[in-house]
Image (cartoon, rainbow, N blue to C red; front, side, top):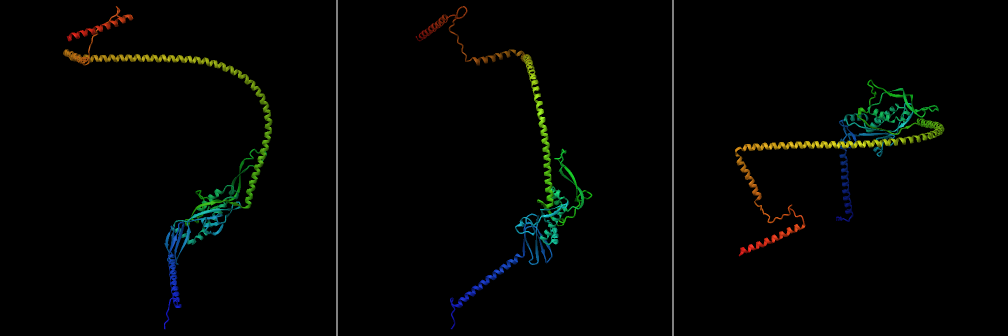
Length: 487
């Protein structure tokens, strides 16, 4: 009899577990295959970033390629290598990091290498620690990049074997061209300029020679010296390395190891140098001696000034007594001179007043003369104008007479006709002006005495009374006349 398998039976549960385990294994295998394929695909490409130069080495063909711009490029996995170089590098001696070897990720943001300050020895055998920072830039020429890669093989070798050693070497050689005292007393700027010039253009060819240097110092202290507080120039013979010159006067140089790779020096900075203990003591003692010398000079000057002050006090007392006597004498003289001056000024004032009156009179006369002369000129001008006007009127009248004469001469025998035309024109004008004109004769006439006037009020009243009677009589006469006409 066959066994019936149900989902709750042992065989059913085992089947479900086996089926579930098989599905999980298939998913796991699929994930592993996918990740493996993705990793294999990423090995066929590499990415380049800005600020870096990449050298791609194909080990199958032996070909080298240079990439300086950002992008994605093909590679053969397992048979090729990619080398990365920074395009700009900063080497700091005594700056950030202060340790040999490559920097960590934090310090890399500040400099490519952070090393101890450079220990230099000056021409006078003194030493010192010099913190400096150098900034280099790679060439953009692929040929020079490939030449650099063939000789140094990677970025760390390039920095440590070329840039660090060359910067340290040029700094040490440049320091031998200065004395320690000269360097720490104002020669730092000149040192920096020479250091940067030799890094960019090549190290000077030099020789050790005894040269004369000039120093500025205070003059020796002495009681009888008038210039003991002044500066004076002193000269000293020292051994230094001096650059050699060619026939044209230019500095002779050694070949620059950076030129063959096209590496440029873009920046050189020098920090605060630290002298050795003995040199520091020398400089400190010199400053102390200078300060003491200045203090001694000041004390001498103070004593000399005090002596002069005492002498001046006595001179002042004697001068003051002489000045008092002289002042009294001068006051008396001044009083007399003042009286003379007052009298002289009064006399001059009277003379000025008289002169002023004369000047005023002269001015008045000149003014009257000018007015008279102006009036004469005006009258003369008026006379000339009247004369000219009369001549013009006369000329105009003569011209009009000649025109009239010519007109009458032209008329000749037609003079009668011409007179008739004139009378006609006169009649026309009179008619136009007198056609509405009425002439009324007076009805009464009153005359006075023999002289023809009304001399008294009675005469006037009598005249008006006569006029009233005459007017009333006239009206009555007119009324009678009109009644007779009606009848």
